[in-house]
Structure formats: C-alpha cells, structure tokens
Image (cartoon, rainbow, N blue to C red):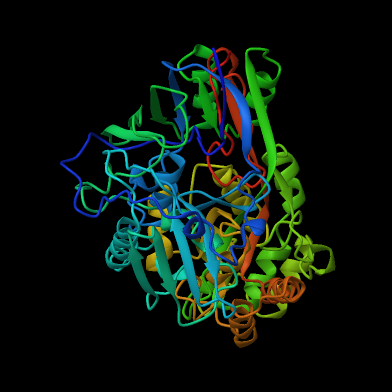
Length: 555
C-alpha cells in the first residue's frame, strides 16, 4: 500500500473516453513559461482556494468498481448538447474545467494554475497548467483551450446548454502557447469569471481528435469512457496520461439504474459497490444499519421544484390559480413524511442554508386548503358541471405535470396530484426520463415541470436565477417581471458582496409574491458505498459532483 498526497479532484464520479487518437497536432507545444509568467503580478490566488481540497488517502491500484447511477441526458457527454450532458462529462471524470469548486464552494484552480484580471474585470489572463495531457496523450495548450471554447459556442447553437450564460459569445479569446497564457477580453465586466469557467458546460475537450462527442469525448480527467450501451451504461477505464496523481480504479462499470429500491437491492446482493441517490427511506435505514456499508446523507444546495408555465394561453398564466395551487400544497408533510426527510421544506427558490436572506422573506401562501378553495370560488374558477374539476375560461383545469423518477420528484408529483384534486384541480402526470423533462422546458409543453436544480453551480445563484429573467435566454416559464429583470441586470454589474446579497433577497421575494414556482424543498444528497471495495464515501456539501470528494479503495 502506498501513501500518497493528491487532490480530491479525482472524483470517482469521473470517467473518460475511448482509445488514443491519431497523432497530436502542431499546437501541442510544451514550452515552460518563466516563473514570472506562471505567477503574474496581481494574481488573486488568495481568493482561489487551491489547497482546500488537498488531502491524504490510502490507495491501491488495480481495482475495479461498479457504480449504480441515474441516466441523465440519455448518457450523452457532449457539453454543448444540453446541461445534463455537460454534467455527465464532469461527473463521469471524462473532462475538467479551468477551475473547480471545493467542498465549501470556494473556487479552486484546476487546468489553470494562475490568472490576472484588470481593474475593470474585462480582461482575464489565464495561465494553462504545464504538463497536462488529454487522455489521447496530446498536450493541453492555450490553443487547445481556445479551440474547445470555440467549438462549444458553435455546436451550442443547435443544443440547449447556452454557454453564453457563462461567457458572452462576443468575448475575444486569444491563445499564446509560448507563454502558456489564454486571454479573454469581454465587452462587459464579470464579477468573477473563474466561477463561470468552473461550470461543467465550460469543460475543456480535445477538439482536434474527438470524433464522437456524444459518447467518446476526449478530456483531461482521470477516466476514459468506453463501451457505451444505451440505457445500460459505460465501462470507464483509467486514463494512463492523467496528470493529477494515481487514478484509484483501473476500471469502473457505470450502470444506469433509475429505481432507488433496485439500487439498494443491487448493493445488498453485491452487484453494486456504490450507488447515488437511494431515496427510499426504508432502504436507507436498512443500509445504515448494515456494517458492510457507509451511508452518507448531506445537506446540499439543490432545490426541488416545479416550474410553472405562465405563458399566455396556459392555465397558470392566471395568478389567482397559481396562488391557490401554492396555498393548497402541504410542503412540510411532503418533505418530512412523503419523502422521509430527504428534503428540508422551504418556500423560496434558494435553499434556506444559503446566506441570501431566507429568514427575511415572507411566504403569503402558507398551507391552507380552505383558503385555496375560497380564492378560486371568489375568482369564479368553479366546477360548473359537477364532475369534480373546476373550469377556467370554459376549459376543465387539468395541469400537465412533466417530471422524472429521481431524487423523489415522482413522489412529490403524485402527492401534489392528490392535494390539488382536493380543491378541484386536475393533474395529468407524465413521469418519464430526464431527457424528456428537459425537452419539455425547451418546447413549453408543460404546465408544471418538476426538477431538481443545483442553485449555486457557478459559486452564486446568478445563473440559476436566470430561469425567471425574460431577457436571459433561459426563461423556460414565460415569466416576465420588469423589476425582476432590472434586478437581474443590476446583479450582473454589482461587485460588492453585501449589495449582491440584498439584490438576490429582493429577487427571491418577487418570485414568491408572483407565485411562479412550486418549491418542494431543499434536497439532502445520499451516497452509499460498500466498505470492502470503496472504503467509505463522503458527499460534497454542495452536491456539485456525483461523488464530490475523492473515493479510494479500502486499505
């Protein structure tokens, strides 16, 4: 057994692409910059907690592991295609970004090892880490990073990842392989571009040699994705060119399993060594009582919610109906009983454990089904034909609720269907997969769209809050509020931390008052590992990656 010091960036959730491609192009230079170039004047490395996730663990090579996971985005790993695919390429360990987040959501350097920014925050110079190779053996260079960003924006036009949310398409990107620097000049200031460049959409891939972005993208992460089987999974193999220490497993079988109880049974039978998001509380209790397993449940920064489609012509464009829906729902019982405490109830789109003024917010729609019914009666939204379902504008109110079976979202949907039926509102459930759920965002084919979103994926909630800004390009709900839009623009130009906190608090209250989201609560992540294979698992408090701290074989 060998004791090594290494970065917890070796996320077990990691995985990587198929075989070594043809020779590297002329951009694969490996000049070594001077010390001054590596650490330019004005570098803000004191703000980049690059040591925060450094740790010591025992590890032994030559191990294999089987990991039961949810299938997001059909298993695709093209970050330009959709957000779920971007998350996959990072979670599977295929690709890495210039920056990442540590367990405390501090930004940490990854493929970039130092940077400078001008006073206006419009010119950023990133030094690309020396001696890093893609899994095909080709060197990571500033030119390769530039090409990756350019391909992302071009391919992103036909996808839904919207990379312009993280870096404006108008940005001028220049690369200098001799100095090792990548320079990004923007037309508008960015409070902290490093956080945006840590988001999985901005993962760096070898565009010169990747021929299959969907299932064999070439990145710099610890694993290579091979043997993709639709609805089955991948075989991940260790990247022999990995730059950041020894890869803990020679191979990992990623097995797609959507049913939480099936994951628990597979763990107990020995078919799985690791599983994420076992959400049946009785299964979790059984596994917690079993000394052969380590169960970790951690409070995170994900919100479970159903977006309301308030577009013209949709039922929920009627605010009284939206208010009645929220007033009729018993979030406390759903979180504490229906899903067994795997969510913490709350009423704002941002979790109560984040420092954005949750305690200062007011909820005008506390659970009161009698009040909900009265609101509808007074607005003339009544059941005229006695069939138990109210009508609005001559049409029976049957809300189309699209969601998928993960993180208890189907449990919430079924509970909401029952609770709304009690006040005469029908719900037609469509519980499919995450790809269909995401497609419905794009098409607007929903009244309620149940999902579970990470809220501070870029270190703060700006990107997440874009979902309700009519000018952001990410407003899937048809919502428009001039005050909210103005605050969103102000947030993008505000650098002071306290001022940003106040703006975000105001934005939350507007969304609450306008009743535009059904917030279930705040998700508590679970990870279960087989002790003899994994040696225990720890969950990142931000639930940023599948396994958000490194996992090593047992000693």
